[in-house]
Image 1: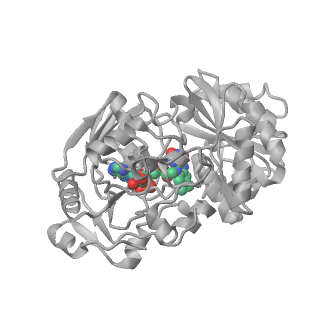
Image 2 (image 1 turned 135 degrees about the vertical axis):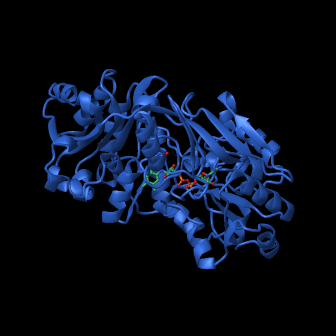
Image 3 (image 1 turned 60 degrees about the horizontal axis):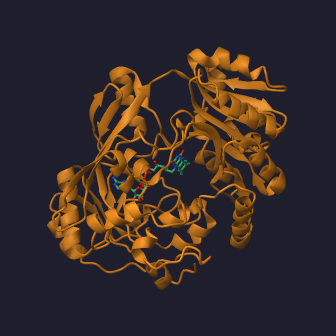
Length: 475
Ligand SMILES: Cc1cc2nc3c(=O)[nH]c(=O)nc-3n(C[C@H](O)[C@H](O)[C@H](O)COP(=O)(O)OP(=O)(O)OC[C@H]3O[C@@H](n4cnc5c(N)ncnc54)[C@H](O)[C@@H]3O)c2cc1C
C-alpha cells in the first residue's frame, strides 16, 4: 500500500520543476526490469510512487530534496529504469526522482569526461567519439537506454569488463558529486576510497549529480561469433583469448547450445543449432590475429564477422553486445517466457572446469552463459545462466547447489543491497547513509542494515521490508 504524503504542498513548493501525478504514468515510472525475476515480480508488482519529479539541474535537485526533507516524503532516484532488481522502485511510495532530463555532457578531456547523471551512455559516447575518438571503457549491455548515474548506482560492469574489470574496481570511476538528503542538502565531491560510499548503493545514501569517468580509445569494433561442438572447448577458447594481452577485446561471452540458435533470432542464420557460441567484440586491427588464434582450437569455426557481411545479411542485426550479459536473458525470455536467470562467479583459476561441471550437472534446466572478465588482474568467468523456472523453492535449491559446488551466487531475486550482494552489512555505505540521509528518506527498504540493524544474515530467512509486509507480500 502506498503511504500518504502531502503531495499537494510539495507540488506547490516545487514551482516550475516538472511534476507528474497521473497514477498510470507514475506507476509506469515506478518500475524497472524487476519482472525478470518471478520472485520480485510477485513481491513488487503493486509498488508505485505518488509523484514523478523531473529536475534538470543540480539547483532543482537541491530544491526537491530540501522540500521533500521538510515534508518527510521519501525520494527514490531513477535514471532510465533499466535495473533488474527493483532498485529504482519506490517501496514506500513518495517521489520518483526522474533524472533522465538532467543529462548534459559538461567536459571532455584526454582520458576522461564529466557529465550530468541522466546522460545516456551511448549519447556520451557519441560526443566523446566525435570530440577525440574516445569512448566509455565500460558500459552495460543496455548501452542505448541506461543513464550513467544509474549505471554507477545500480550496475556492476559489462561490456569492457574483459579489459577493465568491474565498475567498482579502482580507477573505473574518477569522481562523483553527491547531494545529501538534509534540511540544507550539502554537495560532496568524492574520489578515491570515498567513491565506495555511493557506488552501487542504489541511491540509498545520496543523489549523484555529476560524474567524471575514464575514457579509452574508440576502436572500430568488429562483432565476431565463433562456434564449437562442445561447451568446454568454447569456454577454454574464450578464456585463452581473454588472456591474449595483445588482442584488444571489449566483450567475450559464451552461450551454450542450443540457446544461441533458439534465442538469437536475427543471428540465427549464422548459428547452427548444435553450436556453442563465443561472442566477441574485437578491434578491427586484431581480427586477423584472433582468427589465427582460433585456428589453434580443434573444431572451432568462425560463424560471423560483422565487417565482411553483405548489406542484406547486416540488415536488422543488433550489435553483438546486445546478445550478451542480461540481453542474453532478455532474448531467451522473449522466446520462452518461463526463463529466469542467476548471477554466478566461477572463481579463478578453475572457471572453465567449474562452469562445465555445473553445466553438465543441470542439463536442460540451467543453460550455461559465461561472461569472461578481468578480476584483480586475472581472467575469469562471471555467469548469467538461464534457468527454466518451475518454483521459487527449486530456484533457491539451484542456487544452493551452485554454492555447494564452489560457485558463489549474487542473488538477482532480491531487492536489498545485502541479499543481492555479499550477504553482509556494508559498513562504509551504512556510515555514509547515517551522515547523508539521517531521516532515511532515500530509496527506503533497500539497505537492510539501516532498516533493521539487528538483522541476522545467517538466519536463513529473507528480509521483508515493512511496507511490503503491510501490503500482504510474503518473504
Ligand atoms: C537487458 C538488460 C541488460 C543489462 N545489462 C547490464 C550489464 O551488462 N551490466 C550491468 O551492470 N547492468 C546491466 N543491466 C542493468 C541496468 O541496465 C544497468 O545497471 C543500467 O546501467 C542502469 O541504469 P539506469 O539509468 O536504467 O538506472 P536505474 O534502473 O534507473 O537506477 C538504478 C539504481 O540507481 C539509482 N540511481 C539512478 N540514478 C541515480 C543518481 N543520479 N544518484 C543516485 N542513485 C541513482 C536508482 O535509485 C536505482 O537504485 C541490464 C538490464 C537489462 C534489462
